[in-house]
Length: 311
Image (tube, rainbow, N blue to C red; front, side, top):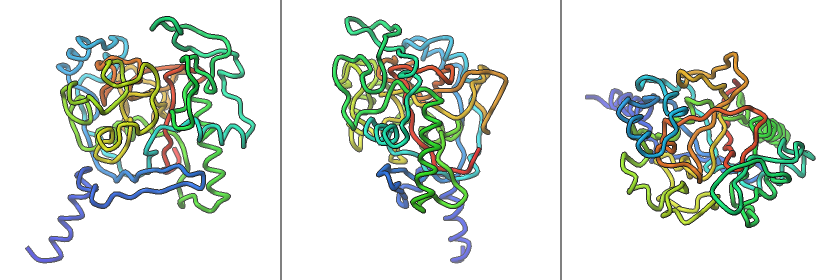
């Protein structure tokens, strides 16, 4: 095999294997100090098997969500690379946006969000609860994930960040800041894996990796982003892709399963991915998906930003 063909082979390998890009990991930092990780184009198997869904239901998964993951995994090609937030958007980052734009979340305008009761693990609408005080019984710090965020709120943040970076002449050509599509999100979460979780198939190996409903994570509610360090990051270097807060995606919600391309159907509901601090393992897998109205805020709803081509 000559030198030219070896180079071609290496280039093909980088495109086909997400894990192979690790040695060439690239990051970018916005003018606001947000760090994003480059995710190269490639392919993956989207969705879950019937066996995985049966297991998820046995581990506390909600049937109304588990049965919306598609009948079987299907190959999806992510044709264009993109950058994705290394962490979920933090309270400090959200605060900077809210103050600069004079922005009020829908939870603030409505006077309430759907949050946990202080005395038990139940849920209900609590007046006055919002990203400043989610009713957790403690004040979130700047390095906690911003929560009580609706899809509409998250989209407004992305529009502001696009304009801010454009003014700072730091917006990559042909790119905008937006929410990731479902396909982009799952591809980035899996980082080359085909297992239930990005680290493998067993729950025990999730210890010390994420904040979910199991008692070994160290948190009753949200935890600081990237709290678990290298152990809590997948092979792309992304932290908290499972657990902590559910993350909004750009797409509308199709109960038949996620789509390879950005999907806008005749429905008012959008998609959240990744599970949260309240989720059982059955609803905290790479394939897990949840539907919600775009205007709805919840103590376990947050997001991370994507820098990619407009959708």
